[in-house]
Image (cartoon, rainbow, N blue to C red; front, side, top):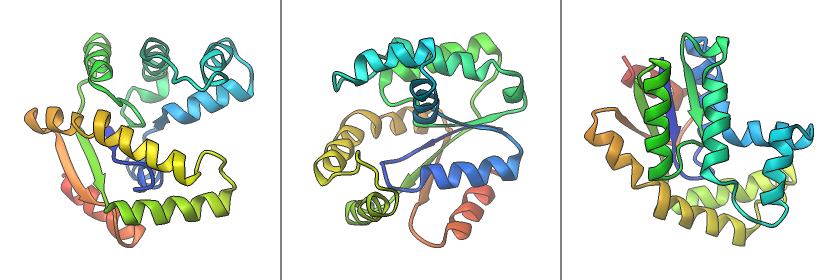
Length: 186
């Protein structure tokens, strides 16, 4: 099973990706986690990423694409994976298409979680309080949600036109949401 999990920040992508990965016995690949790991450990990739993030800039697609391709080629991904946080724009969709073609691993489904903006804001406010996440300020949250709506949400139409899109309500009991997704992937 090769899946993308998409949706705005705070919708529960990371939680559902972890549960689906456990259910299907495949790894979850979060571009955010990969970057944080590399930055924390000051790897070559991390230092390159830091040269952008330290200036408040986004890591360029070329670098993001490189780390995703490298990760998808690893042995633990041969039977499938769940990508969380990628692709985020149309150029990354094209890059992912090329990667998957080169790796001979077609995409099976795109799971898109949805929730009202008020629910997302409340969840992220709670997450910020519980986890002390400095990147969950009201201003940063609003900006990320706007960026998602402008750049990432339109990608859902691409995957819908390919017959890969599975839309799910991201509100409710976590286990119920997971079960709905699993049922819809059959």
